[in-house]
Image 1 (spheres, one colour):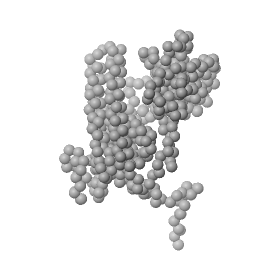
Image 2 (cartoon, rainbow, N blue to C red; image 1 turned 90 degrees about the vertical axis):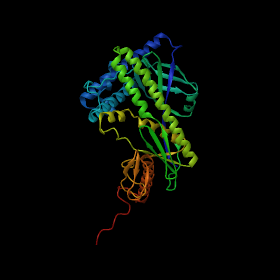
Image 3 (cartoon, helix red, strand yellow; image 1 turned 135 degrees about the horizontal axis):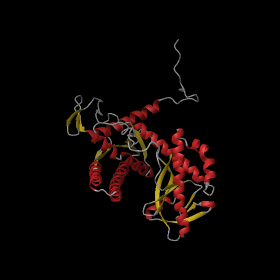
Image 4 (tube, rainbow, N blue to C red; image 1 turned 135 degrees about the vertical axis):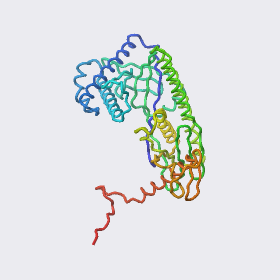
Length: 401
């Protein structure tokens, strides 16, 4: 049976009521010093075109160690990881042409956040306490505020985490947990549920049934976008604008996340009801790489968080013992699933085949084409001969006489 690891992130609010003021000021000082180190590393990495954290660590570790002798050495190691990833993402955004034009030539790290590895951070999931390294080899134990939804992380293995200091002075710990899951074997006769994601609807099913969920995500996103633009044009105070942006952004994220979790729950329940063991989704990682048309359409695509829904559904499905596969969605909504002929528009979102007479909703057609394409790819991978040790086919063709 295939084995996979699932990574989940949990956020805990740190209880600082029993911590003395000297320790709290030391924690605040740690945030400022870490941000200073990361910005220095980003500047060096950008100047020397370094995107590998190992090269960056070899170049700057000893210099920073002498400059910050009381700081634990692994804060410099995690800062190298952090700076290299920021520089790499900046280069990628610059190549894609979607970075802000008014941004400086060198990226800067402004957040009050600290990455922690297993040397700087230890978590006791039984008592919900965290031990964090401070200056001069001193460690402090912090109490974590938790709820019933955190109980599912008790059987998981804690990994890397980060400390986040909010603007209101509250301290949070975001920890990553990993869990190993046994998934069922994939076979040719396994039942499948394919999912077609759109801006306002999610269609799922197979050749036997199809169902559609109305999410209205595009409408919700557009309303909040217009609200943000109105706040930006009407209110002059930057502080007030920032507060309003945070307020409505939190509401927007909460509404969309609730829609995603409800949709994922319905799809997984339907998979259990029908006995499906595989969930197929569209591979949409290249959707936002290029401009697709008008400025309005590009803005809607940027605001649409389809990948977030796929991530939620993927880890939820794996937790319930379902396999998840991604298929290339090219031309799935304009190709006839019965005869392969190109479809022509008939009505609103209805496509018709002039060859076999099929007339159906384009989302339903996309679902059926995804199922068909998965079976074709599965059979192709099964019929290919296994490669030998040199990478060539085990049964090479005979030489011509």
